[in-house]
Length: 74
Image (cartoon, rainbow, N blue to C red; front, side):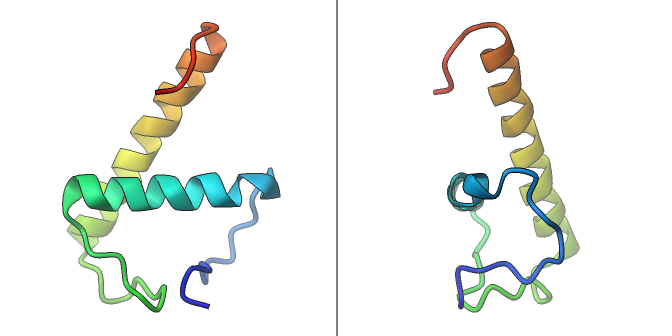
């Protein structure tokens, strides 16, 4: 399945899978990185993969900070 990750990482909250996939797509669009149709990231440059990871981490921290302060994610 193209939308399924081949990662062996286990999600702590499996129900978050869809939201994380959406966040990954949002990150790719913002950074101009092409998401592989087959889900294989082996051909994505290290720089692009690092940029995606950094963007996603930044957004997740931002969401957590907003939730902890009582705010809503936007």
